[in-house]
Image: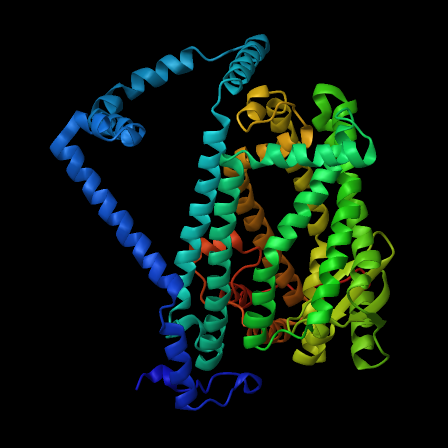
Length: 558
């Protein structure tokens, strides 16, 4: 019997779980079992390997005639025929590199006028290039590239989830039963995600390839004209109706996956608390909010673009910043109360401890709420909101059940660390730069008629152009997402260190462990998957960082 069957005596008492060998063996069997999704993955790997070997064989045996025999492979063959000579010529490239570099340096602009001339020449060449791009092929390529990248990361993560032996860094943190339960939960979520992602990608491909978007756009236009009496000159109204119609279609097609995720996966692992009636009510509330608020934002965005000329991206950045600030304000005060009940935290030791913590940090706390998250899920959370001197803290009732008073304070000290170090403001500022880049690049694409005609459009609606542009932006978005998550993880480490400096070292560690275990979070994520997808560092990294020496925090009054 593996030594990993034995529960570690080093585990904190609160984290010990009674589990028989039969329980462990049953969980091991579940985690190690290869599902249909795994069989498909293995089949795809074998298929790709076989195709690659056959291709190499054909190239070797038939050579230049391959493109003539299989016209569909002509682009691939041309690519391959250029790759081989490139690698053969690498030595000559290396030997000539110093001379080329010297020539490049000597030809660089030396004055501001020359730099401006170079910029305008490049910009003009780039705009000319945009007029001849094969947009449909490019968008389909980027769409599948993004999907395959995500699928590759999912497969790497799935391989880790099939592990049944705890890595040594986490053996002192969790029992083997908790580790296996977390992996079982992760595998079920992974299976659902991979199936849904594949079907969504197929749907997207069919919609784009067979020009379903212009057909749907025209259908909405006919409805608008026949029922509302508005002609094609009312583009904003047309776009809003199109947005509502596509949102409705997407919401309906996602229902089977939402139902399975909620009432099968979450139910199986003890998280779901929703009833069917509550699910239906939430569905229609979400749809109504999407249609109403989404339509208002879309109308404002389109109006801003149409009224501010070719430099609209500057005004759109301001508009989106205002929308973000309004969203931060109204979401917890107007929108979330439609789904959850907020009650003031009762007087007692917990309230007193939180108020003392806020006073120590000079945090302008006005209200303390408990939200009934348990009526939908067993997952826990805590957050704060509000501007200036009007701050509020919200605790999920599940968090209060899972952790002690000191651990709740340690977790809130982490959240207050975000406030103290202005992390929200910093991320908000960086997001404005991102919005500027997105809409500046969009300003170059929006005027390209070929973008629309390649997909069967006879007009150039701005909203449709932005929908198509998002596929072109996907490669940039992938890089931006990685760095946003990297910055977010840095902020999480800093907030942990802040809580640590307040003297909550052990309490924060125990609180993080409990929350992670109660939520069955991934305890051994793939490094590349977590780097790309996780906005929070893996648990082990956070615990290791907390063990570093911390400088005690001193308030101004100390």
